[in-house]
Structure formats: structure tokens, C-alpha cells
Image (tube, rainbow, N blue to C red; front, side, top):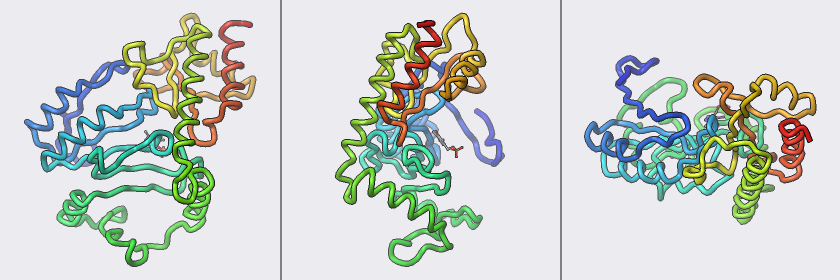
Length: 274
Ligand SMILES: *Cc1c(COP(=O)(O)O)cnc(C)c1O
């Protein structure tokens, strides 16, 4: 148990697991039932390890729906790359941004808010500049503050172009992401590298990002330098997984077979010397 860092009056009970192991869902559900927290939060696609936690989100969402707990889920690097069903998964607050799968500038934060969440938001009536309450029912009126019109226009155009006016191309977009991800994983294994998630947890590999173990006999710094010499930039890692894994992003405009093939050709040349 730790005290909230920024809000010392908030009691936080994080559930830990090793970085290459899923969190124990049985323990999580028990904690929700026994402790009855006000809020449970998790990440749908854990970008740092390339893990897609769909099954866990369903389990936790179900547990939260049977209590007072609000379920707050980060869908930043999943929504738009894989189907996300906010109501079916009992997500009270879903949160995403423009700069990941939607390939726009970092400009907007988007939230989904359930009726259960609005009830709590109204009750708390927080008044900071980042309060949500002023946005309640704004579909019917106008936004409470002047929005960044250019960013809204860009997002609208991107959504219409990529997903279709009525979202009719969504399945194509999901297929494109999952095909590119599958291709990426196959190539990684074929060139003798190891995915971060082992065989048993392969289902956790996200369609938007692939985490790969840094091969023995080299360091991330060395590998990164060589990749950059060929104009290829992958994501390294920080903290506990620093130098242990690197990430290949293939979301949004980068979920493109040609781009990913080029990057993997370069990686293969470096690792195999061929
Ligand atoms: C990128 C990302 C965010 C947003 O972080 P920024 O620093 O604003 O880009 C939040 N959650 C996840 C899982 C992400 O991948």
C-alpha cells in the first residue's frame, strides 16, 4: 500500500507483477471485492511492454460494474488499432490522445464518460481548470471554453479519411494493424530475436507496438546507434526494462507494411550481419 504521490490523502494499492508476466487477475478481482476502492485504473495497451490487456480489462470492468468503483482505462495506444468496446467492457472513463494511433499532432485529449462517472463527477464537483463537469451535456450546448479548432479539424479529417464518414472502414484499419503486427512478430522470430512476451503469453502482443528483447552480446545503445545510422528509430526503454527490451511502433500511419518491412530489413542486417 502506498500513499498517492500527488494527492497524499488518497490511498493507492498497486498490483505488481514481473515486467514480462501478466498481473494476476484473480488477486485483482479479490482486491476490488474486499477493499471496495473508489476508482480502479489500468492501461489497455501497455506501450512500454507492447502488451494488450483486453481480457484483463473485461475481467476488471465486470468486477467494477458490480461495485461503486469507477473503471478508468487508458486506451491511448489501443483505440483505433484494435476494437475497443467502452460500454461492453464497463469502462467509466476511457482516455485517449491524438498523437498515437490517429497520427495527428499532440494536441487533444479525448475522454469517454459513463453515466456512473458523471454521477460521481457531479457529486465531487471539482473546480480546477481540468475539471470535467463543465463539459457535461455539451453535445447539447457549446463547449465551455474555446477549443483548439485546428486540432479538432485535423482529427475530424483524419477520422473521416482513415475510418470513413460512418466508421465503415474501421475493420480495414484493424486488419491492417493486426497484419503488420503479425508480420513484425514473424520476422523478429525468424531473425533469431525474442519477443518480450513468451509463447505462453503471445496473445498479449499488441497490434500497435511490438516489444523485443535486446539480444545478448549487445546493448540497446549500440543497437540504437546502428539503427539510426540507417535512418531507423525504434523506442528504447526506461527503468526496470532499460536495456532489456526495445519497441517497434506500428500504429496509425506507421501500420504500413512497406515502412515496417524497411525497418525490419535494416534490423535484420544489423543482427545477423547478412
Ligand atoms: C503515449 C501514451 C500516453 C500519452 O503520453 P504522452 O506523453 O502524452 O504522449 C499515455 N498512455 C499510453 C499507454 C501511451 O502510450
